[in-house]
Image (cartoon, rainbow, N blue to C red; front, side):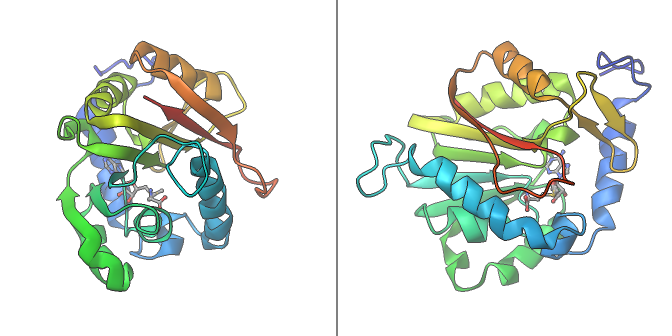
Length: 231
Ligand SMILES: C[S@@+](CC[C@H](N)C(=O)[O-])C[C@H]1O[C@@H](n2cnc3c(N)ncnc32)[C@H](O)[C@@H]1O
């Protein structure tokens, strides 16, 4: 991205965009509440929605899902809320990639006994991260893709596609704006995109849709949230 962003001509410069987000998250407490901006109470609903979304896609019990459950990657993993509550109960091993080393340090305690099944704690921005080719059955990206420019998001998704094992899937779970206009949030340096924006970006990255669902059982005062399974 240049001084004048493609996204609504927003006056953001790339170093400042990523630097401000790093600063914002550097000040957030290493707790579930810190990860969820004060909305810790929604975590169980969020995880339940994710589990039910995945059930038909994964090889579990009598499900017709085709996706294996060997290796998952948690992107923008924070202290490991999703790794602990969603991914480790379903997958043999999980890798975590996260911008803040302090969150990864906390994760080692927060995850508890199952932490020995976290293979790699990778400290990196997603804009600089490339998954190993053919490695992951599931790549989970939640509440973090808003922190990538459109250009980096497209490249990141293309790299994730290459990082999938046979029958693997990428899941994007993000808040969506009700307005068609992408807004820039200076507070945490993120883009607030509409559902249509995500669909457009996924198309631009050349990925195919496997399943799309709105998070249900969600507080009315919060923004709607969508899950996109793509490959
Ligand atoms: C809203 S929290 C969500 C954490 C976790 N996904 C969850 O749902 O519990 C956003 C996380 O993304 C991380 N993050 C922000 N920008 C990032 C980037 N460019 N690359 C990787 N992680 C980033 C933050 O440090 C923070 O841990």
